[in-house]
Length: 229
Image (cartoon, rainbow, N blue to C red; front, side):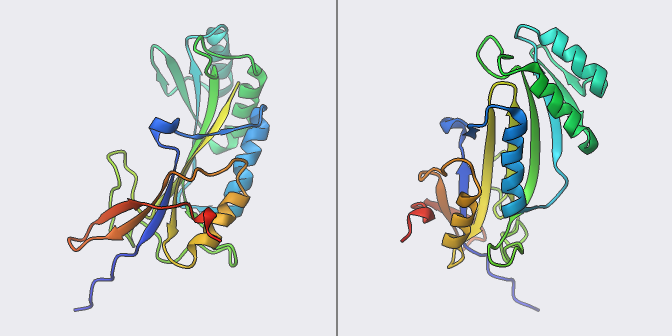
């Protein structure tokens, strides 16, 4: 009977935890510019594991909410979900340009009473990071390689990277869950990611995951590999 492959050590970057804001802010003011920054990073550093999921959310607690929701409904059809505070549309891939136009057309002053974007287009996509020198996904860094280990109660798996971009009327952000190999590929891989992002990765949210004897993992805080000489 073949031996069970040893679990690999993995380094993760959580950008950002909920206590630190949940995501990195994008400085681009215009929604189309913010989305272009996200796409440039994805094209340079990742390959999608599955098709992205797009959605458009319109808040109900701002001036012009009803008019904007009506405009979005006329363009995209009825919302997938309508709640007291927000209406949510699922956006097909071929409708993304139209949805982006709707967000941009609302203008940068379209905010809720709490100062948040009145409308936002969101893209959620599971990805694999790419080796800078070859453009191929890292070998040995998948959820299967890591035994399907769940790192939290929110569905995140060790070895499975993911990105969530939110492009809003008045602000945009990018949330990152990145998994890199914990060997000599780590530093060049982290630098490659940093080179293609429009913001600085935090030094505080890196962790090394080490296999345990019981078939799971434990994690320890790790100094940013970007600080390596």
